[in-house]
Image 1: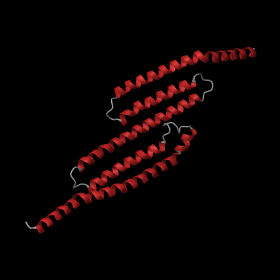
Image 2: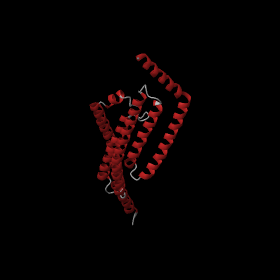
Image 3: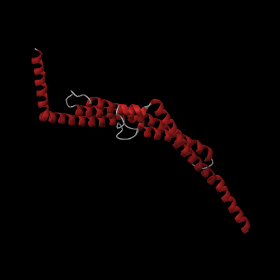
Image 4: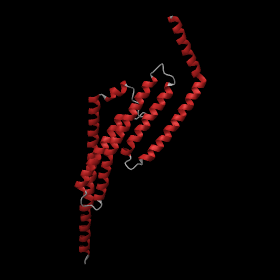
Length: 230
């Protein structure tokens, strides 16, 4: 075999590698970048449309629920989840078109398909959790707004914690499909028992320090009103 045939053989192999691997990879990367920008725009447009049509920002503002997720913007969460879901769908389609000839692409595609299925479950779980957190924040605000209720801050805190923990338990099987529900339930029971114990201690301390005075004043006011009415 002379030098010319060796060089020709090497060029053929190089062109074969470029044609079989590099070109599909280049097409895949360009496709993924395109999908990234397209799905990002679609997600933003859809969420803005939903938010505008339903007036979600106005509802959250009216009921003072902006802080229900500890400062995290619900709109940002919804936008991110929708974008990731659409981006995964687009990536799987681009991979199916461009990387068929590359070894191992089917395994990667299967992983992405499983991840897409998990994303559907994750979105459901996050929606459930957000609903519970919004309810917890709304109920606790209603309790704190009651002027004639004793220890309203403590009661509001316990109720909010209970509803939030309940939402955590309900949403966990969707967010973590392989999670041990029984174990989570036991952990939650321990957590809530700790919260209840803390509430009981705080209640006892508050009652010992100041509640007696409040009760006596209210009793005195009640007796005075009764005497004046006679």
